[in-house]
Length: 526
Ligand code: BES
Ligand code: MN
Ligand code: ZN
Image (cartoon, rainbow, N blue to C red; front, side, top):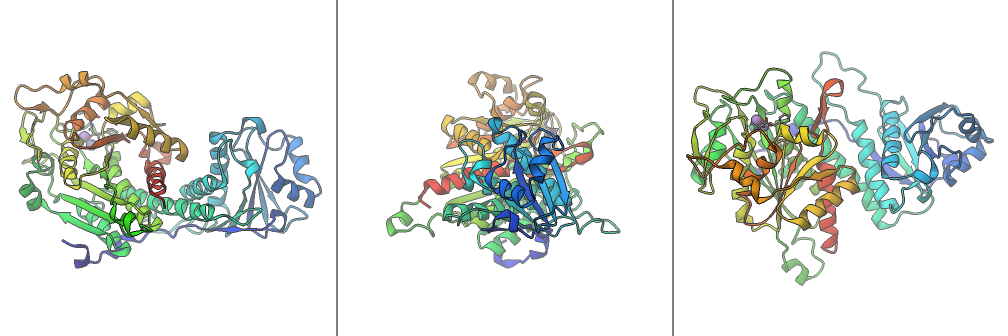
């Protein structure tokens, strides 16, 4: 199926994104419905907040010095009808102590502003940004890229199919960044980049939050096709027969347990050759970056059935796929001058009468055979064939993104994603991207010794490695299929969604990937 054969544009409809602009307005003149101002806990005011304080006859300093605003970075104080300024509401946001300002404190403050802007009755918001409120070593372009993304993250709402549409109208849909001087081109671009990543994240969250009865492998494919059509990149969707021809026996061994047809989605964005400035640049084609996303639209465990508690959350087992599809939306919106390929093996893992059993031996596309000792270790089975498929693109590097192991959550908790890689430079680059984006990873070792745990008496390897180091043995398994290129694996089992009251997809690790891809595009002399 080629992208032009079918238009599935309806599957892309989601909530309208927040619109961002830059205004060269002094904040005491801003008529915004909600004006957010950064202040320090010790009462020292950055220049753009000082002018508002002066217009309001020192009211801000009074409030802060009387202890109305909590010291902690991210605490807020909302003032209605502040005398002397035209803004309807003024939100004071604490950056903590001025000497202690760092990335984390800044993100907390922006997050707090985002929460207020997402719940306010005001239709439009404004945030004053200037060098004085930035963490050490960060510039305005960075701040604009992060701020747009953080604010949109908070503005996101899943359009749940309820009988009555509740509080759909709340929140500012237009936000202006107030700067003290004309933005340079990199700052203008940062705004677009942050917005693009936010839109990719919103799509990823939408796909992930849908129930598995709606978000099927076919639906993922339709979404990719619709994106390809709208943004003019190539999308190919392989069906079961195509996969059989390719010998994707590992992927198909998972798919056979489900009544829903599997799909293998191939997205190809060619920004690499079109955007070169000179002939020579256009022809010194860089090798493509390949992103692979685990697309298990529901993971019941298969015959090795999971326990019932929280099993609904296994609809999120396609968050890797959602992130890759969302990344393509972001890449296309940014028009990055790089070549990127997205691969999404998509299927359910279900316990049908024809499902794979523990003890079954299957042959992967690579020719290596696998003894399936646990049908719940299915992610690696679909990913290994995708990793082999990736070889044909002679990639610069391959990054797979997968909710692969519960063991990763045990090891690292829900703060960083797990990073495992056979290439130190790529691992460092991803680690740095994660820090810059506030979407951190933590690297786990991938030493040779772990490979022994995958020994099988009946095949080249088993699909599980025993009780210990599960996140590592999962990655060790994958590494056997990723020998032809630089490779990194992101285990997002602990970071892709939140449980409990705040249950919902996070869109991670798209912020990290966005930062990484922008970095690659910039390195190419964009
Ligand atoms: N999708 C799960 C991993 C998972 C579990 C992610 C819980 C987030 C929360 C994966 O397919 C799986 O079931 N992995 C098994 C592997 C085991 C059988 C070796 C696991 O982690 O228990
Ligand atoms: Mn599983
Ligand atoms: Zn799974």
